[in-house]
Amino acid sequence: MLHIFIDADACPVKQEVYRVATRYRLNVTLVANSWMRIPNDRLIALEVVENGLDAADDWIAEHVESHDIVVTADIPLANRCLKKGARVIGPTGKPFTENNIGQAVATRDLLSELRGAGEITGGPPPLKKRDRSRFLQQLDEVIQSIRREHTFNSS
Image 1 (tube, rainbow, N blue to C red):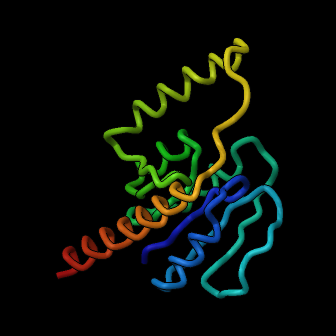
Image 2 (cartoon, rainbow, N blue to C red; image 1 turned 60 degrees about the vertical axis):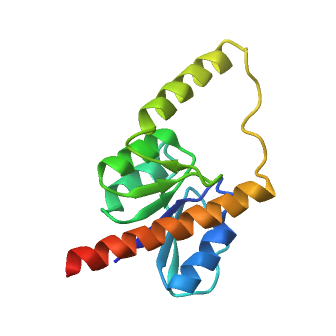
C-alpha cells in the first residue's frame, strides 16, 4: 500500500501533502525530532525520533518500501530511499531519480565545501507559490504513476 513519508522538521509543504493524501486516502507519516501539530486524521501519523544527527533520516530509510513516496530536501536521505525503490520529491517539486541523484550529491558536496570556506552564506531561497504548485503537480503525477504500475503488476 502506497505510503507517504515526510522528513518533517523543516518541510514547508506539509499542508500540500495533507490535501493530496486526503484526496487519495493515503497514509502519511511525518518523522521529526520534536512534537508538532498534525491534522486529526487516522491516516496521518507523527513519529517523533530521538535528537540524533540523522535519527529522522535513519527512521525513514528503515521503514520506507518500494512504491512509497518520500518528501525531503535531504539529498543523502533521498539517495538511501531511491536505493530501496521509493520515489522521492523535494519540496520545490523536483523529483530525485536514479538519473539525477549523483549530480545532486556532487552539487551538495561542492556547496558544503564553499560554505565551509565562507564563500557562501545563508540557506536555500524561500519557497515560492510556483514551487508549491510544481510540488502538488509532481506529487499527483507520482501517485498516479505508482498506482498505474501497481495495477499493471497485479494483473
